[in-house]
Image (cartoon, rainbow, N blue to C red; front, side):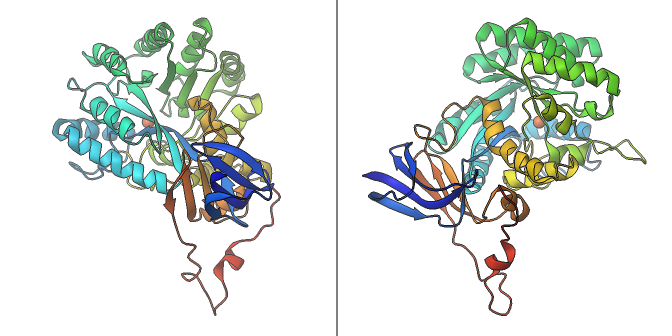
Length: 426
Ligand code: FE2
């Protein structure tokens, strides 16, 4: 007797199978399963492991317009605006915004999030609030927190001691922002300090790194070097890495093998990168996203992050990782069937690998978390960004959505027949 069976769904690899769930674990994946307290009919629908976001800012989310709007649309004005928001925010307000966002995320099937949290506020309000949120949502969202000295580890006078305090309070991952330090030398020194801190504590590292159009911003080289020197292979990620789009090709031919050897993953954030970067360009205007295809071809782990939803840097967003992958597909020109499929994997399995989620995936013994989508396969899911018909988190159905056939009907024809078109093999 199962607690729950998700019946007849199409898995991402094209197999049709029932998924049997007992407690919070997947206990069977085969056809013809019977006997459950609850059955979810997923016939013909894509059943995927949950979406995963490896780069987000939950302390800033849903604050758009407070205290004002980013007029220039640049990263630097966004950082200034965030500083103004920090002056007026309260612990309760940060917690409530974060919890509201977690509801959005869960309803979209986004069940694991790595969020940076600013450690440059002497009160550490954001850290306190998000540690509380992490506990409150633990039944349905795995929230991993990164200690993030937003104003610069060396540039901000109390950032170093506050970052250490945040890690002592239980923040999971060491972050940084070397391109925001005052000099290239300070940027490199901050990378070394933070990697040593992570190595001493046995923690992972995820730095905002080279989020600029300046091809001479090369902190990823130091990050990879330190990862290798300190034995942190497989535990380090560089977020954004946008400067790589404008680096010299010869230099990149030396850099990518170093990243591979050092086991450093990359987390581009396509929505925010296409919006924030290239703002100083006239024409030709750069796309602002790192070398996704080249890193994938090298064998480097690459995920896609969301970064922002309705905050000082970004006015859009719904918590839908399919929007992120859709933009990534366009900006990185990943348009072959294999590449489109890879974009879906990047917001699911690859992001889970970056976050170190060992219980993840649709396999017997894994955590019973999944999402049922109104699409026939991963590529169709990217094209439609469809309704999430059912979300299961740790064995429990936490969100249901009715298939809305009526809203697009034309002459009485059911819209799913027109919208769905299973032309792609999966
Ligand atoms: Fe970020």
